[in-house]
Length: 508
Ligand SMILES: *[C@@H]1O[C@H](CO)[C@@H](O)[C@H](O)[C@H]1NC(C)=O
Ligand SMILES: *[C@@H]1O[C@H](CO)[C@@H](O)[C@H](O)[C@H]1NC(C)=O
Ligand SMILES: *[C@@H]1O[C@H](CO)[C@@H](O)[C@H](O)[C@H]1NC(C)=O
Image 1 (cartoon, rainbow, N blue to C red):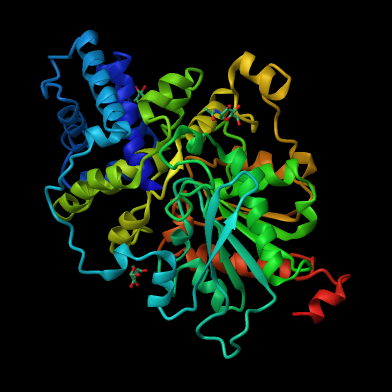
Image 2 (tube, rainbow, N blue to C red):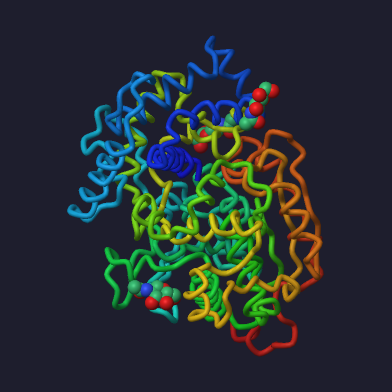
């Protein structure tokens, strides 16, 4: 997800250009960053430079070069020229059937990243097998025709018993993520492996549109019809299909534990509030970096919110279908990732933390090539727009806003319906952290008090812990997963299977 922010950052700057606020944008970012996180300043100072110079060198000049503007600040391009330049990119993207990023990203990588590490290009099941774990891929077709591939570690390689255990857990990745998110950190640190080793049958969801779920029974993946979805559709179609599939395999009495990260929590809340029967089907929910209300977003993603009432403009800017197709972004990023090796990894770390919060101590730099090889895994632009709308609409957790007329058609009301959180009766634990720029303490606490069956609101006891640290932090096992395992085992009173249905237990 960090990579998203890097590119989002670039796209946001383009907004500013297009809106002709070119001159004020960078000083603002510098101010915000300087004021918000003293650690960033210290970090850059340690490198012997001022934060402003750092941005000018590493971020601004790069963007202006890409857009073809003068490096010299005094020659701010006029609006007509900007517009022409930008519409050039848009029409280029349209002619070549690409998103805008394809036109900006260099076609040829100038530097070649070292790909000595064979794991960089491996899929989730290949990675699992590489580390000696049994791996399965299952195809699930949703009721609206999307073909998803979900993954599974049926039992641990360290288990004597080669039968998948009854205890079941479903891991759901966040925006732009995939099943790989849970195993990138490797066998000792990745939550997928850890859960398998302590005796769970571990399932990994993959949402429509990501690396593993880019197919539909009738829609071509290159069309808007395919990408015309938000997290709402994931919650209404993908999630039920995945849960139903697991029950088909394991028996209808099986009680699934759900662990979500970021958007993986959004879709859980949307599902449980709109299809209440799933409150009975699951055993408990564990929400890492939960995102529902968005009143207190520190991430500059909120800059996107200003434009969220002009959906067409956003779509044009970000690409109407897929947000950040992996190749274009990878081309762009790998170029920098390689430079990073020369620049003490400065650019990568810093551009990411601009939007997501930064925690250099917890970031394992060894994982960077592997992360770059798997993230971003794909998401629809409409999902991004949906989040941006929430920020604009006072942080309300509600369905997609089509505008007054569209809403009347879609919902029969001029404003989109809010998700009725009071209908969530599943036992739920929330895991949040102080340095999460997307899931702030106010918003998470506000969510927590709405829960009918709260388990606990656990705040990670490390001030600098951020949104992405839940997946890959060096100390995630001791700071987060230990607590998570404890709550899974002791914090939930629900059994691991439905005791009323004895027949299906015997049949397994
Ligand atoms: C950051 O702090 C400076 C100095 O205290 C202040 O002038 C500026 O307005 C602040 N900027 C933001 C974005 O809060
Ligand atoms: C996109 O989805 C919305 C809501 O599901 C639907 O009303 C609309 O017709 C769809 N548009 C296209 C072009 O598929
Ligand atoms: C960083 O990741 C590598 C590769 O998975 C691992 O071997 C190493 O132990 C990790 N370092 C820390 C400090 O966790």
